[in-house]
Amino acid sequence: MNCLAIDSCSSVLSVAVSRNDDIFYAHAEEGMKHSELVMDLIDSKMKEAALKPMNLNGVFCMGGPGSFTGLRIGYSIAKALCLSLSIPFAPVPSLDCIARKEQGNEKKTLAVIQARRNAYFYAFFRGALRLTSDVEAEVNQIADEINQFKEEMVLSGPGCEQLYKTLPDELKENILLRNINSGYAREIIAVAKNRKILDNGTKDFLYSGPEYIRKTDAEISQDLK
Image 1 (cartoon, helix red, strand yellow):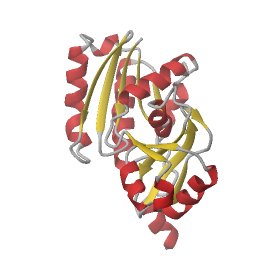
Image 2: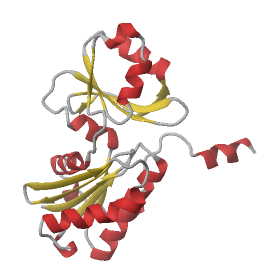
Image 3: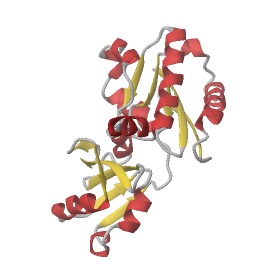
Image 4: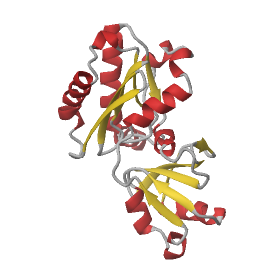
């Protein structure tokens, strides 16, 4: 399967192209400059994989949660490519991709993405197996949930280092930090292949949008009027 994956949900932008079982990957840590960099990364990896757009079987992007702007960029580019090429498009849940890196690890994984206002998007996994739904909360609530498990766990994803610094010292003893600054485009493809997303019908995804969890600033301002 020849696929393109775009990870733009955090400050680390990454792109991966699969040509059958080979993966061609690149990332950029340039802050939120995704719109300026993403097409060059895609072009570079497509050339490295010796693929042309018409050779693609599908395009994936992060489905959220994550950066509002970043997610919209990924969705826009992925949908545009799929519509122009008449190939399937599908989003893949962001936190599942973060947890995917821990596949085979029997420890509990807390996958996190930093949000605004001292809050984080997160979910708990056992390796790559999801245990909870996606939630947005501040540090105190997350610390309470960690404390309930009473076991060693992995803390992984964009924002994990910042969250770790703000946790109580007694919780840090049982926490392992992983993938502090990482891109997850390879994991997007791995999750999509594992779930056989392209085999399950993808037409509805063209009318879908990112999973934001919380309201945008514009929506909050509208609610206050």
